[in-house]
Every structure is written in structure tokens, then in C-alpha cells.
Image 1 (cartoon, helix red, strand yellow):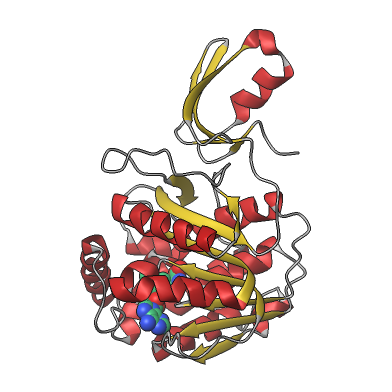
Image 2 (image 1 turned 135 degrees about the horizontal axis):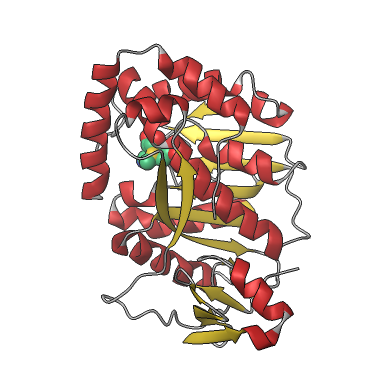
Length: 328
Ligand SMILES: C[S@@+](CC[C@H](N)C(=O)[O-])C[C@H]1O[C@@H](n2cnc3c(N)ncnc32)[C@H](O)[C@@H]1O
């Protein structure tokens, strides 16, 4: 999987961030990176100033955009009938997920970002003002703290991207239920760490308990076969560091790999992958070896040899995170 920001978002980010004092941005990036690595719940908002928000947009938004875009691409493949008109992104920050959703479904016309930090909404709104997509341009940016006592307005799609880990542990289950009650499709994305996976695995159980159908990444609805404590289900997307992002990460590589984990669940029954590739495929001359999770809920190694013709050609192109065999 590889994803670049849409050109209109890249140029809006470069304009918004390019002129800001580099030292202040660098200090914020350091602080935010350390804080996010700690991965603990936040009792006060982590984004505490205009500079923090700009730093977040510059160094994290391209990566969260890439992760959300990769996930929504999978949802679109396995729920081809799903053609959302409305979406709510909760804890939306500067709006990465609404851009990714608009890029995935041209059917979207009503996008809403709910976010607790006013400065994030202000920057998100500014970035969206010149978007090519009319849906992104006309998105609603609403200040709000997650409050599970008040139902969200109904929407076709609800997303929660890189937020669950910031919530107190005791609030996570009711938040996931609250989101799933809002929308036909719920998509949760977390950093691809063992702790991120634990949160997604717990959410998977809650969603199944609510009778939701899993869309992706799981090819089955049985117990997750990944041995807890030894491994974790996660994926990776490569993104180039361009413009403001490159400036902020000065002197470092011109790309990065964003690791993420996710679950997408639907109120309507959907098709699923036959199996899902869980590692970078091992490609040797005449042989591709795939570590997969299968529709029977087991981990397996699949070997595809040159003798298998068409299937082998597909295996040469398959990546970590893809469905196997590829969906049509
Ligand atoms: C790591 S950022 C992710 C932003 C965005 N979703 C993305 O993928 O780029 C987490 C966001 O969730 C927001 N957030 C955390 N807890 C929240 C809450 N209880 N209510 C509303 N927003 C919240 C934070 O202010 C922050 O903007």
C-alpha cells in the first residue's frame, strides 16, 4: 500500500505551514512525538496551541491520511453496495479522514468533523476551503467533546481515527457502541502498535456482540487467531515526505512507513476477503510465500509457484495488508 496526499491538500498544507517558524514547529513535533509514543490516555487535549496543531498537520496528517485512505479503500472493495452520502469523523483533528473519505466515495455530500480542539478545527477548515471536492469544501467543523449520553446525528459512515487510545480505558467500549449506533458503517483506526491492536481487538468483540458484520481486515468473525502478547495484527502504508512534511522532518528519509491497525464493521451483511496477507510477502524466483489469516480463522502460510500461472502473477503483485486472492 502506498498513498500520497491529494495535490490540493498538499498545497494547502504547504501554504498553511511553510511560513511558520521552523524552530517552534520542531519543538512541537518533538513534544507530540514523545507524547504519542507513550500511548496513554489524555486527561487534557494533547494539541495545546496553534503551533501544536500546525505541527500535527505537518508531520502526522499525511500519515493518518494515508492510513485512513488505505482502510477506506478496503471497505469500498468489500462493501461495494455501500455508497455513503453522509459521514461523521469523531476526534477529527485537522480533517485527514474526511479528505480520505471524499477521495474514496464520490457519493459523499455531507461531511462533519467533531473535534474538541478549536485550533484544529480552524486549521482543518482553512485547509478544506480550497479543496477540489465540493463535499470537503462544504464540510461542517463542529467543536465537541465525545459525549456518549447524546446520540450523534445519524450518518452513513462514522470514523474514529487515532483517537481511541486517547480516551480513558473505561470510556472506550461505550464510545465504540455509541459510534456504531450512529452509522451503517463504523471504521476504527489505531496506531499499528501492540497496544493499538489490543484496543482494536476489544472493539472487534464489542462490534460482533452488537451483531455487526466485519468488513475488513478480518476474513472471518471467529476468535482472532493472532497469539496475544507475541504478535499483533497491523499493516503498513508508505508515503512520501513532501513539502511542509519534508521541511519538518529535515535531514531524514524522503518517505516513511505508517503502521496502523483497524476494524471496519457494517450493519448490513457484506462479503469478506478469502484471506488477508499479514506480512510482507516473501518473493523468490518462481515462488511467492504469503503469511495469511484465513476465512476459517487460522493463520497459515500459502505458497504460490510459477506453475500456477495467473495466480502466481497476482501473487507477485500482492502486498502486506491485501486480500488474497485479490478481490475483483
Ligand atoms: C491523534 S489525533 C487524530 C486526529 C485525526 N483523527 C487524524 O487521524 O489525523 C486525536 C484527536 O482526537 C481528539 N480527541 C481526543 N479525545 C477527544 C474527545 N474526548 N472528544 C473530542 N475529540 C477528542 C484530539 O483533540 C485530537 O485532535
